[in-house]
Image 1 (cartoon, rainbow, N blue to C red):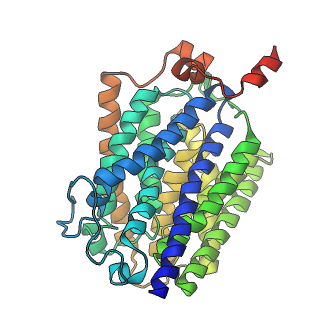
Image 2 (tube, rainbow, N blue to C red):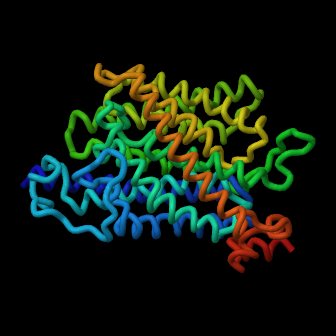
Image 3 (tube, rainbow, N blue to C red):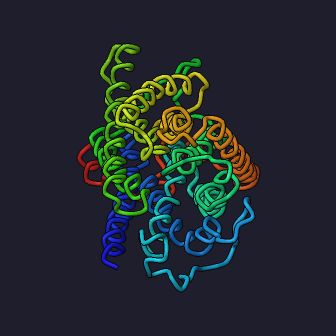
Length: 405
């Protein structure tokens, strides 16, 4: 029981760290967007975590971890109740209790919609975004997650995703891609076909957000060991940090060579790209492999951001480059660098394709139906004057505004 207590306390700490990541996402998103949309973005982020936890309790946990499983779809049973051994060392090999299991996994569930929030910032109606969040977090994420983490067909195939490069980050990234295509770019983003910079209102907040996210990743990856195993936990945290550092440094360097300026936002997104990239295999990498994976992720960020701009897609925070591109890279990297010979590039590639299929189809259906019925984009007047005033009737910085006049 003493070991169960130690393991369970570690898992609770990790749960708190993953929860803290929502503050990081919020800071990053508001920092990289304009002041007039701050309340709107904060509202979306608070809605995601609150409704996400409730939905995960009502249907998500049972869908994702159904016990008796047919390989494709779990069971939709409202609410959860612990099994007889749920609070004993017999549950989860003594790694944690049933309730800790639910809460840790519930924190992960909300992250996928948070990724989409950044990509669609500054021009999506709040109502349709809330509808999307309910469907995607409540149904799509747990069904997709069950294919691997719930013991489904991808798990049987040998697909490996330690903490969610694909199951969390790419799941959010694919939906972000669909949403950005459906919405179109912000007013003024492209002029004569060329992308124009729309500066965020607080780079210091964005920087704080990235550092908070890095801290939260200690729980995101460290908790995914699913116990306080000293050897595996310490290795996981080392590979996580080295990949983040390499991602940041390489993104800053490549960005400087390509654009001849020291771009802090590229530096920040490089760190996040390294973190996303190592997440699929943090427990099966050597430190050297982690540095290489992070470095490649950092370089990918710079080229992916430029490529997305060339496609005339407007992603205010770089969510598609960070979470989708680096999520796919990190998942495939397991098949290349893993110290476990059972991990193959073939299984990893099949996994990437399967998640692309369910996410693209489901996100397209959700946004297509809403676009044809209630509409998903705010009016030109609302976008130019700011969503805070029109959607919420509030101002994030009222004293600052008064001082401006």
